[in-house]
Image 1 (spheres, rainbow, N blue to C red):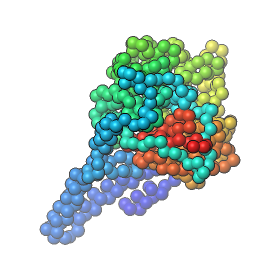
Image 2 (cartoon, helix red, strand yellow):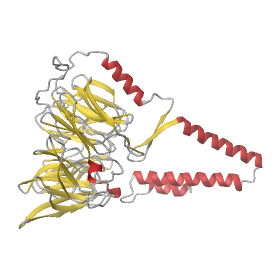
Image 3 (tube, one colour):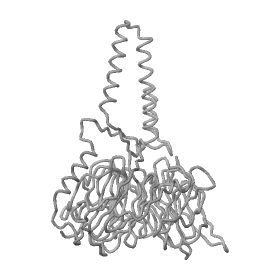
Image 4 (cartoon, rainbow, N blue to C red):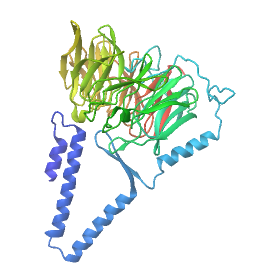
Length: 514
């Protein structure tokens, strides 16, 4: 059995990643322990009293461990993190921090009107959508420090966070995210400069599973003075940006007759015209369920629905495809384009991933090509207009980029993405790998691009600066930004980067001169 465990752990088989290895190793280890205990009890030849004492000791150890452990969380590669009961409870820590914060009035806490509301005005650092205005992880017009030895990231604020894997959006003096607060989801606005909580809207909702833990996954969207948020259990809420007052609320899973995904609703709401679009999906295979559903921005009434595919974990995005605006979504079974104004699927490129985990954002290349990637590899899809019908064809497909949850970046005809856990660069035209880092493990982290610089937030909460060059892998600097498993996307607003996970949140200034 030990040889089987060793062979499984060291096996190098395409598609048999570290997470699967650890799953099999754990199963084999449990079987080995059970067989050893059976031998001890039945075949060891020891006295009856010795065997009884041995079983009692083992049982006592197991019970003690069960009583001592509050929760066990797993990384994407199935590495466990144990939260023991004698450590401070994260909810107690968060509530104590916010209570103390609310008793103080920090300096520079944002412009407050006579009614106690935050004054909202447009700023050049505003980030209204998940991963930026095109949802492609590219932030323009910002100059960052390239030398973190001379000008290291400057900590602006850092504090406990509620659970979940959403990131921030920013409007004026507010940074907004959605968190888990015990058995309630909470859309929360923080002061951009201080981290002070400005307003909160919470409601009963709790999604939890073993691998990802508890909490919402989808980043809110800001549009025309309103915030649109989607919780992990399907609660779509519209809030007033300045006050957090609820305008309307719907449950898109209940209204769509759809079951939830294994890892919860994760697609950030997309505003197109006078509707907000979400992707509840067709998990039950029923005739009533649809891939995409559009709700009226003002009233929350359902306007249209389209598609019959199971949802994935990526967010819908508005893209000009062959010179026409389309809503493009990487769902549970592939990449598809929908008419942005009518309920119709225009084209589809099938893509199969293990457990249907299509989570990374597709990348638009020009006006007719898309890069998609998951743990199964990567593919470049070309959309063409054959008469009156659009069709998608595969340009190339390989396993040189297995991005899991990490959304890749395209820059100057090159792809930059996390292949398994290491950064890699591929030629966009051919899919040929230009380089793959031999060091700098980022786990299943996330990327942004600013000019010719990549900002990488690792799964371990480290923030790294990397040159976006096809010549070689060159990391310019790295800091430990926050602690704990980090699957949340960072948000770059001006020269300030906001990072968070289910334990902490922080803001750092990355300006060239501080």
